Image (tube, rainbow, N blue to C red; front, top):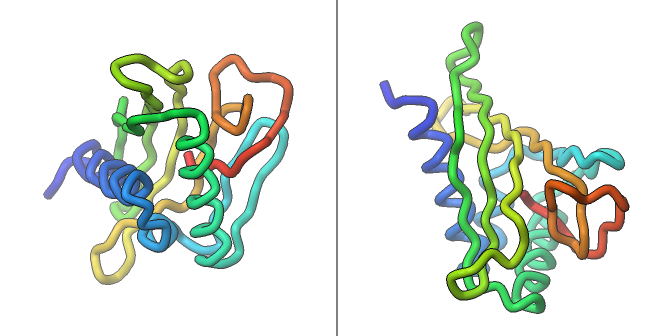
Length: 151
């Protein structure tokens, strides 16, 4: 059986690659619908794949506008739910780069994955830090959301 951390990281890699390649439909299809992103200033719910795909497009466009040259996420820890082998919870760090430097401070997110009857994993919920200039940041407290976020 695969380790929770390996499954979680593989999921992050597929989402990040699809985000960077502008394959917004794949980004959306890797999430459970409805999908909830929990921000400090309140939840944002996506009721359709189309709405989540559009949010992914907006986030990617925003990264371009800021001059980002890379977007990576790295699992810090992940574990199977002891009562449900089809559920993984974990924490990961997101890195937005311009050249070899951070465009913004790396930020930590929490994510839950659920496995369907066909063995595919989907993001269920995400908890992300506050936004500054449309990008999650660890020290943001102004509640300003000027762009979409898909963690």
